[in-house]
Image (cartoon, rainbow, N blue to C red; front, top):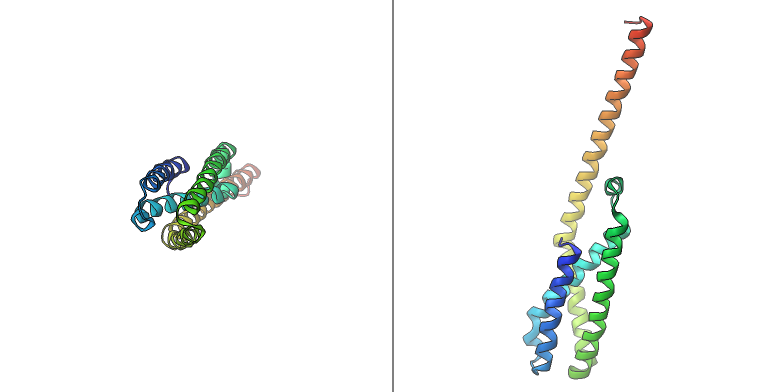
Length: 158
């Protein structure tokens, strides 16, 4: 998964390329690569927004969640503005059916991203959460054992 800053940068670059291609009168099929890059970046940004809304428990321990959520929200708003401007451009030049095709293409790419990249990212986060949980449990058990041992030692039980 790409961080939100990189995702919005890629989306902006692709967006500018799409706008210039539309201005030059290129066919929508000629812009498939740029549309794909834009869709992937928007998908990454949406995934980052989803993760900012519900971060894993171990990330809440370190703090800084609010700053990350605010950053993602700002980038999401910029992406929404790009989406609306792109919809206006494409619908005006190629017709509303072209925008529907793009939305369909974006949905397909989002699904592919979810299956390939986001599932792996979520698996990684689950593994990290389990490792943190096990380590915290082992440390707590060690502390409890030490406390019980020292209490028993002080009472002369062993």
